[in-house]
Length: 223
Length: 114
Image (tube, rainbow over all chains, first blue to last red; front, side, top):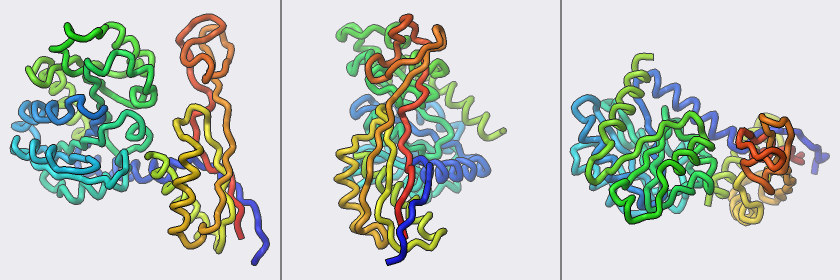
């Protein structure tokens, strides 16, 4: 055996993924495709919110959705029923998508006729925050039953999001949910986060959210 | 299991370095893990043992873990404190205008190889 030597590396373990994510973001920018990475806990209403978002924007943008889950295709079927193009990604036990998997998903979706691609990440507030998917913008949904203290418990998720949707506001009277405290907790983690209270079921707040997304997609395409 | 994703990233990075520098065997990887990085060293170790067996040059590679203490700085009083003990709120003046200086990183410090 040759002489063993010590080689100094000093490199973040996320650097390989971060590099892939930057490359993907650049490619999408050149093609004029906006990629939204949507994250949340399981059961916060990602798919219901998406069906309402698609209904609000389908006449303006060609939309494609990637549904990432550990198993099943129930979400992709729900999205397909809206008329939008959709694909189900199985992570095979992995709790998040990284840039490489996102690229594969986009290839599977075929983005040649897509302007707004949406990645519904695996329901999880921990790991998806650590792996840059190459998305143009990051959004997350916090639903009322989860509680206003989540930004305190999952700091990284809230610190990387451009927009936070507070969903299921119709059930606020039944839960001990303090909206102002929740907003304060989010702003503490991320002063730049845009906060939009919504109810995906009744459609309340969806217009404001669709406005935000429309502006971001247009800015991305024109820049 | 995001530890598994991290392990795959470490292996990819080390394999790239090994290729660049014509290394044939990597005997250890020293990883610096911040206290508030959300990475659990014990899980990382289990994933590591499983994943390196699937590689060529890291088969016998040890994972050495070096913790990094997390420190937060307060913009209002200019003092620092241990993040793990006090979180976002400065224990000196009660301010929340604080930011993490060090402690959320996970980085490969060095490798031993031939």
